[in-house]
Image (cartoon, rainbow, N blue to C red; front, side, top):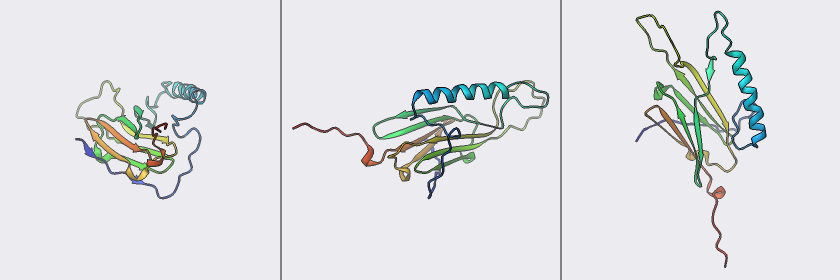
Length: 162
């Protein structure tokens, strides 16, 4: 089993602003427009200008989001990240994952670099009906798994017809 990762729970509801938070439960058209906007932003940032970095200051790590009857499961790819460099904040409306990938100290000349280092940041709006007090996180083999349980009252249930 992986190492448990501590989770900070928010006591107040944060203000979630449009465009700053990934909202997988929104309609597909909104998602498409957001994705196109993000592509153009990345293209403009990716123009190699003298003295500029190829990567933005912070980035969102790759993530899969699985919805089950009991929970929402987030799996983040975080190779090279130490457990202690991950911060998880959860409230009723938002899950926030952030941290740092520390650059390795080198003795020689780095001739080529495609591995990311620096800050990562991921925010996602959570659907209503989650139990933020029972959120759990584990980190194993470079994969952070965050399980956000549904509240008992929001779980689907089957009704028998008499």
